[in-house]
Length: 333
Image 1 (cartoon, rainbow, N blue to C red):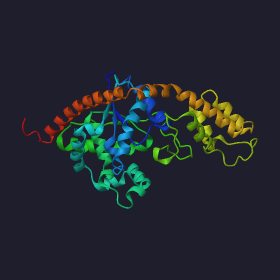
Image 2 (cartoon, rainbow, N blue to C red):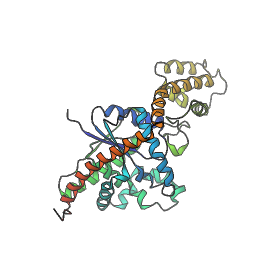
Image 3 (cartoon, one colour):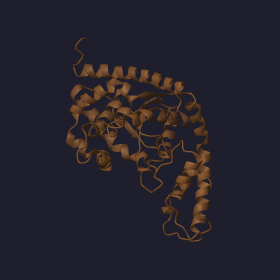
Image 4 (cartoon, helix red, strand yellow):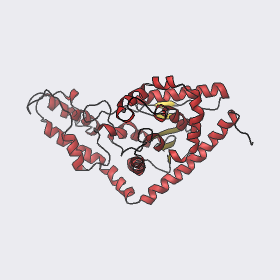
């Protein structure tokens, strides 16, 4: 089977957490062996709601690259690149902005949800950059002719908007761009420690891949459990307990026993949490060991990003030449 091209990535607004790990990173490691993979460090998009804090974005670029490498992303198989260093993406964003209306952007469910979550940043007036970031994402995807886009369930409206832009472009300028398909992994979305439907950097409900054993223990001990369970020997309900939820992720082979003992009142919440802490620490240990390797070799991390960005730029240049020819902007050729 011919290899297809994948585009995925992360905004450098903080270290990556177990939501990223189960929701997308494991898929990336698997898919890099099957398809040509481009992984974007989306620093330009991070600035859409961190425009007043550029140091935060800059400082987290290296952090998320080390997290990627630590979980098993191989720079010989995957191209890791910096969005801001591929100017063709910004150029495509400008061209595509003529193909989508403000009303359509405002109807995008993902955009509507994220604007509501960021009222403290924007107040009642969202910026042009943030409202238009689905257009920028369409540029990311099409700049590399990517056809497989691993995303969480909440990102599906963004992929559909990209498909609309591609269809509109092709209907006007000819069949030049490929329509991407969303790829959903087994774990579409990982809940937060507080029971929130989404684990997020800005929500304060995440366990990070780089967290120490002490940090993991503190977070797990504060996780939401069955509110109706008062005493240790009271029957519990694992279906409303975030500790049981994470046992499903980290305690394969043990989770059935854990849940049965909980329901029978034979296992207290503290013992349950301590077992989960142990399992999380053991699971993350090899990832953290690989991360320490890169923490001690910052020049190697820099070199991986520089080489990946050079390759990405060359690919985007090919797309831009094709787009400009289609739009009759190739004046000197």
